[in-house]
Image (cartoon, rainbow, N blue to C red):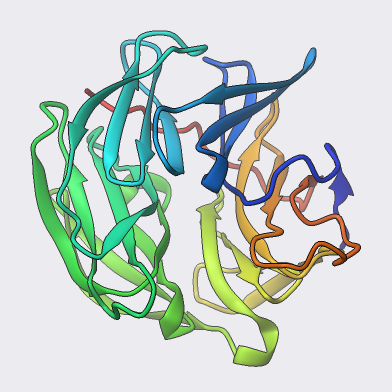
Length: 281
């Protein structure tokens, strides 16, 4: 199964795609540029955050969006911005990297170590009042996190572990962390992920030129090949939520890498996603 290039290499580090009808299509980040990029029927639109990095973005319950920068949380009352800094967080030798909204409308915002700082990242849970609680600590590169249909399980990636882990969700808390799928190093490293309505889990492989699909029991059921090495994240979207949108990155590649890295790709893998959860703040 191969994916179609929708945009060409318009980003350096495309990451964290999300589909929302509130902004009329698929939106993702161009990380080091601190831009939000949206693909709609009328073309590509960019919105810059007043920040040094853009980590991920989600819609808000009351309209607009929330976006996480390097260490700041940005809020907008409109899908098109502008956004304002509403909170900042002391992350030490780390910055925000990826995250999601849980079924209760709270942000789960993961961070990653800068340089050789080691396992200094965390996952914060940020409520609608913007107060935060540490959910996970001793994380090196916090990446994909997503919930199963019904919200009874959550899937999570700390990339350096080479695993996708799964938690039980009990009264909104993550419990019983355990391995779900192991990625051999020669196949790349797990990065962003998404969960389909049938419970299958779709994982981008950084350095692996692919997205893997896993059944709820952890068995490999699909491999989507990409013509670039660094596949960063994926999400379901489209009118029927049956299209898998896939971001790719040229981060760290030489100027002469000669690939389509930095493009947004799409494929219809035979599964459909779920509507995105909106932030309650």
